Image (cartoon, rainbow, N blue to C red; front, side, top):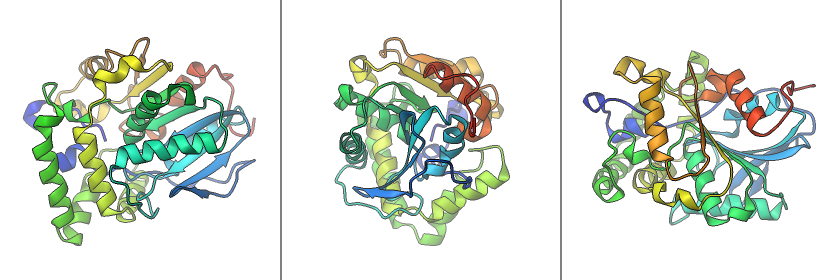
Length: 311
């Protein structure tokens, strides 16, 4: 999750990197396959066009991307992912969560023989997309990064480094694993307030939080706090679109320009990156500002402007 607040209003690490989860089920689309399992990931394939691997964020399910997928039919073939440990999926025993998920996603691309698919990632999924492009540049095509930074730890304090954040991250993870279940769920559910406009979406996020594996969530949050990709971005050759949100943080003093500045600073080493800011959407831009996000993706992917489900 991305929280950009003035220093005077910073939240605790657990709130700063709060649990993210995702969407309400939509009707099945034409040419959809039943969700299948690949190395612990659940993947559903929809459509027959340009392959787009859609990765959700922390504790989120594939349905966070479903409305976007439907709107881009019939021009794209969506590969809707739910990562292990999130939104009801059984956890896996990876020594390092982010690199483990990165390698599983790259293995899926190779196994399915996808030719340089677009990789779209939200929040934690955006960090995974960047990691995939760094490890195997030839395996991925364009990147669409939704409300995600290459270093979440510096969202509030640009001077933060993995070394300075590690003690806090370790304390956060230990606390998450030690606290009783009722307290953990109460904190996790409270953290999603303000992630989306509609109360029904928030209710879904809370339900998905309850169905996610606590250890997987704690490990993922820890790694997001101590993983800094900013210095490596110059090695990414994939054209990249970054879509950011800021409106939820207006009451805390954020402006569109101040938030854009954070994105621009963090992505400074990524040549040719295109950064666009939503006018009204909160963190889940796919739900809160769908027409804008879909138009940005159509333009970036050179899809017809009229693309929509059932067309």
